[in-house]
Length: 379
Image (tube, rainbow, N blue to C red; front, side):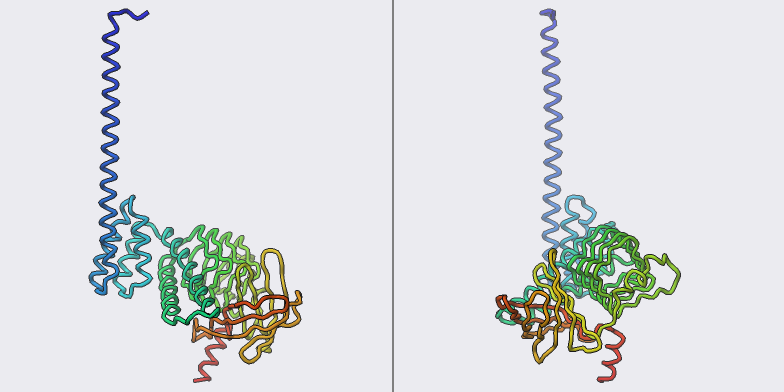
């Protein structure tokens, strides 16, 4: 039993304890307020710095970029600063500003995060360009500036990614449905990356190491793959026409590009890659560059047909689903004039189907060495 004489002492202890707890809570609350105030100040400073990145003056953009990348070392604003800098680099033309941003990203150890964000942005840029092309085919007014601007941003994106992956190992990045023609990543490492339906034609991947990566329906036309290895990687329906596969040094024989991709390296005089919603189509022309063996597939079905080139159209016949018809060519956009790669599309009219828009990328000469020779002859 508690004596009555102890009651005041206990009450005093309780009062003291409550006071201490109150002081601790107040201190924590004040600390959180200070942190919020600091973060708010940093966010305001970052926002103000980002405004300079839109200046027409290169020195002002450089000052703005310097102020933005300072925030890469601040935990609260690092992610925002990185995204702001990467977005600005798609429009930047001053080399010193680009170097400033990339050097600070590397210095802060954020190459992997930056690469993943750039690849994600590349996918959206490519889909935007492709959707814009589709709108023109459907009757919208042509916007040459839009197409040119999107191609410029894709080119800038590729150049930045090439710089960030140079000599490094990239892990768990999703390259699905991206546009990286001419990606420069020799001696790079890629682990658990997904390249399904990625366009990597003419990329320099010499000596690259791919471990447990997915290359289903990847386009590797004309790619440089000497000494590249593909250990534990899926390469279903890869297109590697004209790719350099033969290694210069001895490597793990079972996983070399020559062993893994040789079966997909059939020669062809022309190749089209058509994609509409969840359907993908490969059109491959042999010695007769006017006749294509075509195959389309989605998650549940595969269709085969023969395609014959006509004036301003392709005729589809002998279709396994009975849907023969005509692919009218209404428009082309040049993606790579030197290698004769174009975006092509128009109206598709097939039996038992409503007329619809079709779009594809056409490698008119998928062997880059032959294309170079032909261009020299044309000159």
